[in-house]
Image (tube, rainbow, N blue to C red):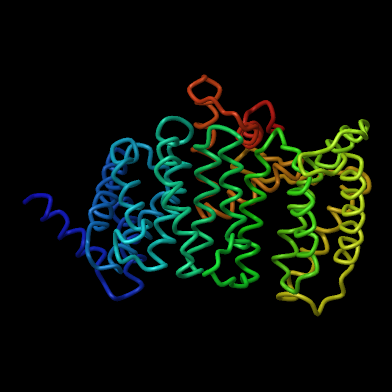
Length: 413
């Protein structure tokens, strides 16, 4: 009886036809915190999140949507470690219930919000058993939802969620590559006799390439599958000629990353033994020459995009960003110069000095939005401490790359 009364109160807070109700509930939380003492702040936050969590049981879809929005806002505004410690499993499975096919009549908006909430949960719990559970429990529902393609508006959040849970909770390169394949199938599905190919939108292509590149940046040992790499580079090169600027930018970053991690260099090392053949039947020397030709084509495309006069792509205000990016890519291809980004996080300086680090930083910054600074100041250093103490075994090099610049001896203080 008590739980039902609690659910009714929760529904009353989030059940409204007015889209401003989420803002109103967030404002109410801020007002409560402003009049509470420091010792009461955590209690107020947990109480608010408890009500939002209860509202996820409601039948009305708009109520669940607004509760999910409020949960995401709460995770962005503060690190919810105590709440997650108590309600981790409940929140995960409520969000998965919104994603799983047929479990609820969930709208595309609800699926997108639930996916984003799971990503926030993964970044909050950090490495360890809980992150592993998120990955194992979520991977199949995400794959099924991505495959269903009922409404593409949900797809970007599903892709970002898949990238984040693999980044934090994946144990090895094989799992990372499996997630990357799931992403690639979104824009290049394996068609059966009764399946009709649907041309992906420009925004969907850009989202897939961005999430795929994010996971590729964490891979340390590449598998030398000649055909796959030739196809990937050829496809990304074709995207540089597309009208949509976001597609060209995502493809350019992906290509810079592929060459940074040494695809051509690895085939070059194999080409010394010209008598050997790859699994696909082509000789390493032939593969190396082909990839060098592809790289030459990409360089010429980047030159054109770095001096583009306009009239192609999205808003004109983005033209300078494109030019600057492709000038950086050219500098990398021709002189080996890597990008150098410095960002102030409080009194510290977060630095990225490679395409891998830059892609990781930009992806997480985009995912967290307004909560990025809070997570970098509080959440990620905590993750690093877990890593340094041996609590979490990280098999990917990406996490330390992001955390090390926050340490005092690397902040330039």
